[in-house]
Image (cartoon, rainbow, N blue to C red; front, side):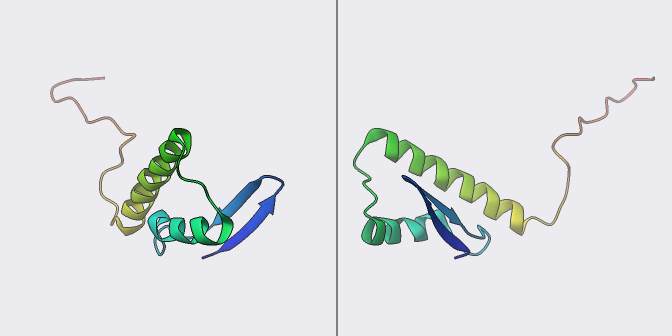
Length: 79
């Protein structure tokens, strides 16, 4: 894990998503920090963190390929 910092009532956790997944950090946060996962809002945020982590890991393991922000060329269209 990279770093853990407490800022008031917020906990800032920095880590490399290519090496560690949120699902590996969550049990530690529940046991050591007392993260309460019973609320609907917290469960939604945790699901979002898992989703973002999956994307970060996929991007880190990607070999490049097509760039998603470039539209495909239209055959027969002249400029």
